[in-house]
Every structure is written in structure tokens, then in C-alpha cells.
Image (cartoon, rainbow, N blue to C red; front, side):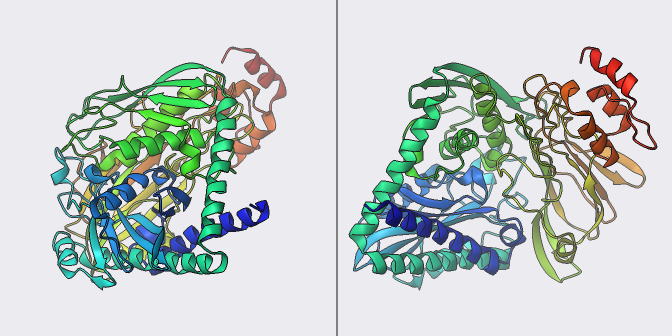
Length: 576
């Protein structure tokens, strides 16, 4: 085909996934969609191949193929124009229950040509969890309603019985119903644009272009893998706990085998599945693995079906990264996925250290739900304010306040004023946290200090995540230091109480949460960092005078931030 036409069609397919996403942001009722963009949108072809996507939250970038396949297998021969499907069951193709997948078959000239998909995190899925997270879960049935592949609409008519079943199993009915309609509408926008594309170029031309698009991604990814030296690379990374056994870290062990243009990621030595909610279904494990690899590859490679053809992920059943029913899994997209990405990076850093980033801050924060007396409405909220810093890499400092690595900067923080309007909270402090970034020739991104007050009674709260231990804090690379662990407290009646991750803290009106989100790890020896950069960071409040001296070997006047050249030379001559 004409390469220019292929490029035009490829860009149009990509923009259609963005139209689906923009529709979700503009029509949702939950700030999880409209503010944070916690969703992914995609287009699949008739052969169930991922053709284009916009992974607003990158950890979801490769988790949708199993959902599409599960729907097709369940309804093959019974798929019609006007049907809309739904699935959230992790044991029937999904990754974790709060991320609900909605997809619509797209017909043209009475022929199934594409699928339009919108998948996002809902504010409520029922069960005992808070905004979907239940740190005390010991079964998937503790985590909320399980929806196998099913029809929300059949030939354009709502399947009222299924809608009633879903809404009767959740507390925040208006939010859930609104966001389901939002997803249905978004897939309709995708359908309309796909039909316009088909009408303009015809089915044969579009299908030929899709083949070229997928082959191009395959060819580019082969070249990227070939640039990694052949060999076997091993690494491991741990999660603080699973919410049930709070004193036991869980370890993911990875062996990466690179041979020519093939990459095998083998997790066979990982811990067995655990009682708590950090188990990762296979689709989530594959998606997190792809994220770790794609993050060091050429960013111009389209993340479609072709890009994954040379990658194999081995995850034995019954392990923490491929559990068997009915293991709980809700936290898999955050602490477990973070740990998988870190293991991938730690392994590949042995082969291509110049391409790999140091570890990012892990997420450890709150979900809350209840009734907001200020608005007279129920609410459900993920506190996306307390985001930490990104890891550094060769030649670049990490970005501050960027969030967990599973989002790669795609997760937006809500507007503070809107956050206070929608939720019964008052923000007391929200700023960069000094000395939170891992020191290095290129330092990590800064973390944050986020303090907020509870202004309502009867709220439910879940604290979930990882990175609160020195062993799970962000690591540095190539002689750099890591970042400090996450820390969380509740201040009540003048007393400051530490909050353990993966628990249900009791909160009352007047309580104050204080979150110190860590920064990212550094890259390279800190004593080689440019003195002027250290001075600028100290002047800006990102590094204290004490740590400029201790970590970077730079002596500064605490009032003027003038560099003491003689003392700095002596300090830098000492061993880091």
C-alpha cells in the first residue's frame, strides 16, 4: 500500500481511541474518569487484534485482549449490530474487578469489522471494599460483583435485568450508572468514527492498512529487542504485604531471556498465590511486563497486537502472578504491577543500563467513600494528590509529583478546589517534600507532602499500596541512592499515629491525614552531579543544606546558598 495512506489511516485509528477517551472525560460523573483519566480506550479488528489504543493509564495497555476474546468466545454467532458487552470478572478475561470493560461491535455493510472499547476504574463495584479496594479480602467474592461476559444492550435495547443486577449490588448507584452510560456513549462515538473511516476508504483498504500497521510494529519491536544483548538476566522485587499477612513481604522473581529478536519473561520462581488482594491475574501480569519493556523502547512504536508478537510471558498457575480462582486480586494493578515493572527494569538494567530508569515512587494512599453533607450526595474518591516522584535515568532527572510507574505520568491530579467541592475534605498542605528524591548524578523526581482534614462523619477508608519499607522503597541505579520509603500518619486529638499499608483506618470528623510520598531513585554517583544543579535544588527547597553536603558533597551557606568551593572539593574527594 501507499505508505502515506497507511500513515493517514493509522493516525485516524489512533485519534478515534482519543475521541473515545475525550468522551469519557467529558461525560462521566466520577472524578476518577473526568479528572484522573483512570481508563484505557482501544480499537480491535474483526480478528480480535488490538489495532490502536490510548493507554491513559499504561498498566492497562495490554490487559484488554483477554476481555475481547472472552466476550467473542461467549457470544460467537450471537453478536449483532447494536449490542454492547460488559465484563469485569478477572477469571473471565479481565484484570481486576473495578476496571470494567465495555465494548461494542462495529458493523459496516452488515459485516463485523471492528470493536470499540472503553475500560475504566469505577467508583464502586460493591462488596466490602472502598472504591473497589478491599485490603481484608480473602476471596474474589469479597471484592464486589463479578460480571462475566454479558450484554448491556442487545440490538440497541438495554438489557434492563442486567442493569438492575449491577446497580442493586453497589452503594454509589448514580455514579456507577452514570459512568456505565458514559462508557457506552464513548464506544458509540468510536463506532461512528470507525464507520466514517470505513465509508471513506472501504473495508478492503482498511484491512490492508491494518496489516501494514501491525507488521510495522512487529518489525520495530524486533529491532528494539535485538539491541538488547543476548543473555539471561535475573531480578526480584517485593511487595510490603497482602493485607492479610501484614508482616510478610511477597516476592516476584523474574528471569529474562533475550535471544535475537525474542524476549521471554519467566516468573516461575515467584511466590505462590497469597490469601490477600495483591494476586495478579495473567492479563495484568502480561500488561505490566509489556509496560516495563515498552518504557525502554522507542516511544514511536505503536502499542498494538504487532508489538507483542516477539514477547513471551511465563507465569505458572497458582502463583502470585497467575492465581487460581477464587483468589482476591483487586490491588494487582497497583502494588503488584509496580513490582513487576521494577523487576523488569532491574533485570534489563544489567543489559542496557543506559535505557532503564531508576525505580519510581510506589503508590500508598487512600480511597474513601460515604455521604458528603456539603453536597447532599454520596461520593467515592481516590486521593490522587499524594503522588510521588519518577525515577532518574542516564542524562535526565526524574519528574517530581508524577505518580506511580503504572501510569508513567498519565494519571492527572485533581484540581484542589474541585476536589474540596466534591468531597468532604479540606487540604491543609500540598507541596514538594524536601529530600524525598533519590540522590544521583541525575536525581530522582521529588515526592510530595499532602495533608488533608476529614470534614464529615461515617466515612469508610482503605489505605492500600506498597513502598513503606526500606526494602520496597525506590532503588537507584549505577551507583545512585534510592529514595526514602512512603510514610502515612493520622493526626487525631493531638496524637500522631502511623498508618500501615493495606488496612482499613478508622477515620472521624476532624482527623488529619499526612502523607509523605517518596521521590524516585537516582541514577549515577551523586558526587558527580553538577554543583550548580545541587545549589539550585537547595535554593528551590527540594534538597536541604544538610543533604546537599551529605549526599552530594556540596557545602552551601544556609542563608545565601553560596558554594564553599574548598569544602566542596574536600567533600567530593571522600567516598560516597
